[in-house]
Figure 1: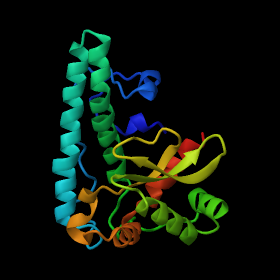
Figure 2: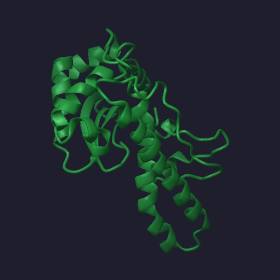
Figure 3: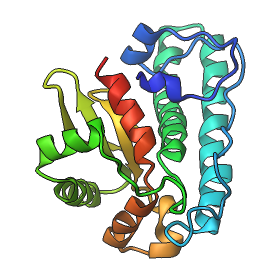
Figure 4: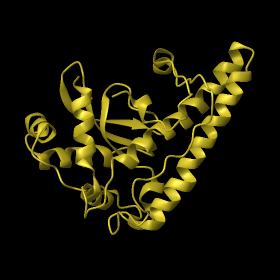
Length: 225
């Protein structure tokens, strides 16, 4: 699965994968939009509060959408190489923020539905093969993600070269390009601080109760194609 496919966009929007992989440049023919959540804002409680989800979705993600649209409009009007270069950071930051969050919402599911439930199947088998056990995988992902200095994302990614699942991180809102993203965890403070304060491990331990492993397994299967 290409990370580009996680974007919420009009059907008339045209993308160049080659261009995007070099820089997050999109051939704009329409506006990016904020995707609707597949659950209510309070559906992930008590693990992620309604207040956090509402602010995270309607304020933070919306800001990335707005910033990406503005940057693309400016990019379309740019007339010199210098103007194009100046716009790259805004495209990367806001485009990455939109991509990462669009994936993140699908990564989650209420605990009384699919959240936290890892069924027997290809993903579970791969986690055991590549990490020793599911619990060892979670511990490794939590440790590496908690160790991010500043803001960023912890990822379970599929490495097409090694054909293995690996835990990697990206800084700020950089999208995951080195691997196919299977599970992404937002470690920006806006994702947890109102509820967990500065105790990142508590947030990371809690989030496994609402991780949508069915969605993750679907990404894993598609990544291997």
